[in-house]
Image (cartoon, rainbow, N blue to C red):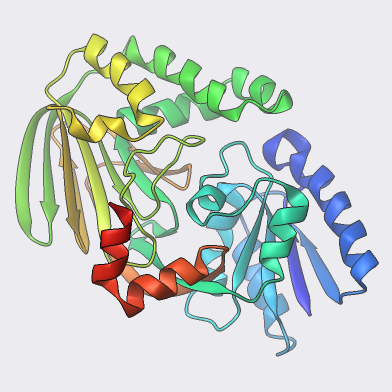
Length: 318
């Protein structure tokens, strides 16, 4: 039995349209399924948990929605044998990108039915679990501004979620001020002056495909950190096009760190977000929770090869 968890409002209504396509495909294949419709993060985890305990033959929990929908049910699937699948229908869909899941609905459904999964890490902290990344500082402020804007709804309506983020960058750049930040990785403190942002990543991208930590892998037991510091507004603005391909990592005002446990403390209160959801303001502490979630993914074979022969896999990547 497959459990579909559907947010019909995600992606400006894309969730509902995507479900209609998936429903027809499931009926055509005569595969058994149940549906849960969620309209907000509140109560989604309890709803999924309550459904899962009523039977034992679940093949997968298949989420139709965006990163926020996925975020809301992580606690329900954490540490369970039931794998999670993703059929992307959000504005950013960075979780799907990170797991190599096609944006095409039919191809994503094929991946969901494949039974090939990755034992995926999660970020764990005081604000709960996160799958993609926890962003602190400028980019979190961008996300807050975008989520509160009218242009996000317009961009979603025309299928241009990334455009909303670009508009948000220009909007936020006019008012945001950098400040000193302390970043502790596994207890080792790194201090940066005039820091714009600190991003702690489990997957390579957020913001609709911005490769903030291009080397991040969701199954390596490590968190990747990007710190942007000591640059002007003009340099920061010129940085963002390079993030589309992950080229920013070579810039002198970008520092990349790694660790299992990360603590971030800005000298002045800065917003933080996880999977696009607000984490409030103030000091941030997260840790990697290895193998906490099973995710059905076309990259499962690559993941298995890397774990079987890490040296060979690293050589193949570069």
